[in-house]
Length: 407
Length: 147
Picture 1 (cartoon, each protein chain N blue to C red):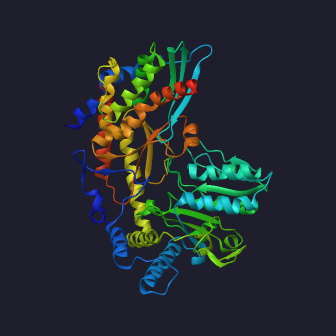
Picture 2 (picture 1 turned 135 degrees about the horizontal axis):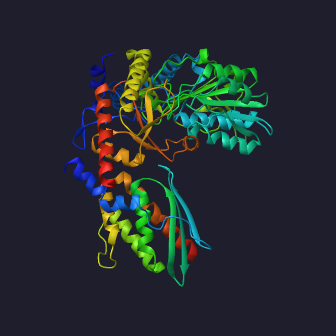
Picture 3 (picture 1 turned 180 degrees about the horizontal axis):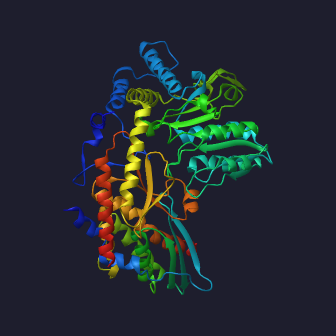
């Protein structure tokens, strides 16, 4: 993979922010979009914008073919068995909410358990809190090791035959931890529970094989993997999806509508009420083509190298605390002495460097780390070692700046 | 403007002084008006306590977690409203809100003192919410008291 060639495909990267070349280190919040995706959206709106699955006109057919073609791309991308198992959603949040509201409420009862981890994003916590409250189930947390990893012995102890749902993120958006999903899924299944995977931070960066993971549900967001905002997908095993009720009712998802009752379309459309996110899905399809053309293994290798380089460089900076394990995905969450992460992010921004500061939608994890907020630099296929050098240099400058104003 | 100069308009010496040595930090003893507020997008939190007697803010203290801007603003706010009437405190809060939005404000009504140092925040839109958190808590408390 030639990073300079890759960068040319991302027009947004070629600009100055506050007079300095933009260094975008916030891809874990949202990734930038390659020209292939931008042009695909443009092409759709210019040439064949039309509603799908209705009417007989030519544009409608083109739009339907492109929309359903995108579903096939998602299927292949995560190696699902059938496109019936791929539901387009607004993103990971909506996907997890769908599982919680439909599968969760129907299959969890008083005395049952839902097991998650303290490192989850709010979108993989609150839907389960709501299910637990509505059903009388207990929400249990897997303990974390000091370095922010999960020990399988703890998984064995926490998941019991009362556990009905286990939901874990594959990659942590704060710690960068890569969780042993396949192993956790096996333990969940042995106890009769289903395994839900929050794939928001893994699907952009590594090969996903839902059959190999043997997870029951897998959620992803398009905008974190070079696609547009407002589109994501839920994978579910066909046998489970078939027995689940839709949670949104209206156009597009029906088979027959009577005055008092109606029936639903077959999978996957019964879960896609209303005009779907047509342009978004087509854009996501283009993003998948792009990622596969570069190669997920190549991307993972590049990010791993960047993360290890950044870890090494940050060790040179006195007073910087890095959170999470050594073996990690392409992101680094840190704090810098007494300088609050918002102040760090503001000073870095004046140097053209975009990082995230705050609680990263993971308040329970912030509590576990015993911090109120952290700063995070996250990397993607278009980032370079030179950018990490610029970041470290600006971080040193930040420390000096606050050192001066404090003295 | 170079980035360092630009930063200096935000991180004025007096702001850093309030951040390092916050005034009126802690809890009030006895009965008081207590308001908890947080900024859900970034995790800043404040607990503000006020004693209101005869239409006047007799005392105010805060505890909180946050960045230099949010904590220094809380420190300055408590300093500014102590001894003011409820009406004046709310009027000052409105002036502060206008300053943050870069709007015109009545410069003659109050001596702004240290608060003036926060003027630079309006050039950093992402940080305005940090500066206004304590003021919103104060407004909320006083409005609840009136209601």
